[in-house]
Image (cartoon, rainbow, N blue to C red; front, side, top):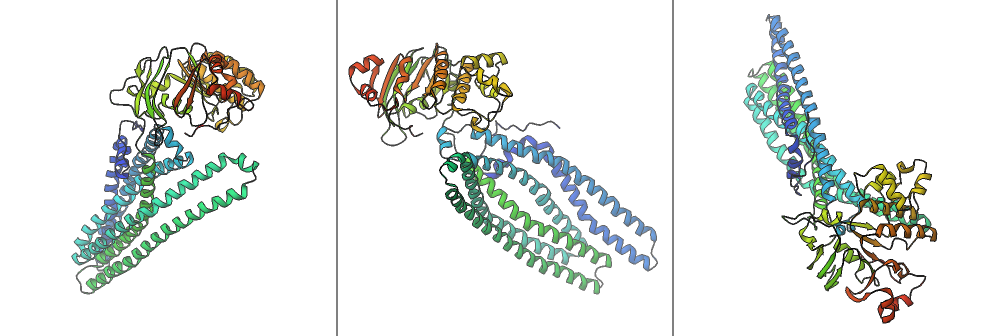
Length: 597
């Protein structure tokens, strides 16, 4: 059976019920088959106690001279009903498997796709490990919900309704006791399940944070070892572990209390049904077969109600986990395409920051800044920490939205264009290159997915990366490790440059790609950057002023304002801010740290 698990066109909400509906819609056919199979199978299983009644009555009649044929027919009736019920139940298993696994796949895909559209600031506020944990919980929980609803709750309600009808045929009194039993126990279990949802959500939230903290620790294991902070980190982790244990214990105790109450009510009502059945048998109102029927119904319903309490506890925990995950994952996207947004046509790369305003805090960083960069010009941005260098490039990449003014690429307002088309027009070489845990070939191909092997190798040669790649055991098919840890800083940087060369975007953003490298690596990368910058509009953030000799123009920022603009020689001659920075460099670096994101 072919079906799609992709739900791009279905709006996702934080409401778990609507979310389950959204991810189940692509799988409605197996869902319908599975539910119908459960209804039919559960009804047949509920009929089996009635078949036991026929067997008991036939056996009692046989002892008094009745026909042996009736007992044989009743026995074969049991075999037929049990066999048919079992076969149809297996149909629900096959169809339900398609539904459950499909819902899980759809949930994982939809949530991952949604997360990838969040802005940079969102990821600054959330642990990557915690987000992955929440996606996993929501996806796995979706399959669990399908299983619980299909094979537990639907089965429970069909069994109870069928059992009530059968009990009523045997004795209306027994049927009324059964109805009272279910009428009291079912609502109580639903009530307590709802009360447990916040406990489950709190437990899942602590679990996600603990998972994120663990991933953060393992990601920084080298720093921990070099600073001999193992004891500190383990003690810090203990706090989270104890919080998780306390939350889990509260949740578990609540569930056990519900199960205890279920057990007491179950004993009371099942005992009442058996005592009434014995009394009615003694009074001659019902037959021996009827008492067998009632006892079988009692055991059947006892099992279902026991499972109801247990499954509602499990269901409420899963529901709480899904709700908590959706609350964090499905926050509104900060950067979205406007209605009617069209792809950007960036051919030449002319840039215009037109009277822009923006700020993370109050007062804003930029207050009416204007900067024009002709196509093909190479501009170096200089300034101390907090001056706005990195923020300016992030605004160009639409990691944040302006509060005023406009940014134009070739005369087109990027706020009116699709986000992807804006970013496709720009190649970025960051100061700290990060690679995917994939092969070198795949990492370079990220610049242009349809590139040939020859084009990948050419880009690597231009980036001065081919030489070291060839020396690796598997060459271009070498896995680089998590975040590229198997390669040196200079090697990672050259892979990123090769990726940017392959992308061949008209606009290039450089965040001082050589500031933390040895001299040999720096020379190789400077040569690669010259090739990369050829014919491009370039904005280079300079942490080391000596790297600006390739720039046509230098723009000096201070507190979000342009205080100087000109060539290196002209600005030195002016004796202003740039000249002061040049004189006060230590080892060629500006006295600053990277700006906050």
